[in-house]
Image 1: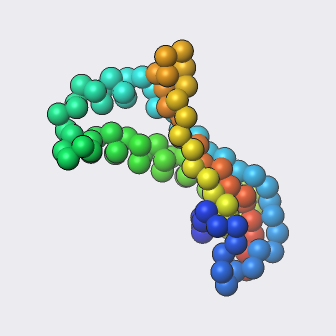
Image 2: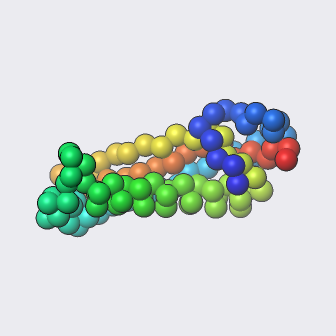
Image 3: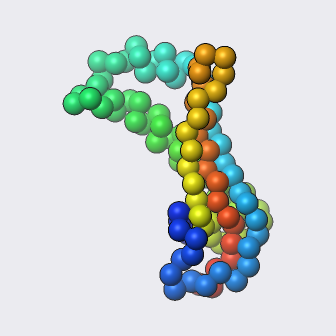
Length: 107
């Protein structure tokens, strides 16, 4: 399935729009505690363990969005936006969301 942040896919005209699709992944407070406990992993101002957690969450949100698009009969998702939000009483959770438009394109 093609997934893009652009509103169109060059060379593949959109034949129909199936609707808005989303995917979410929420990281709990324990992940942040584990991250700070493993702060020694930081090299050059970056934390490999934290980046892996964010990457996994982003991939989970994208996969959920793709699955919802497939259920609508789409073969692509255009106009994708990925957002990161802190949630909870003390910002103890982080949500990664992916949103786009499910479409059928000419292949």
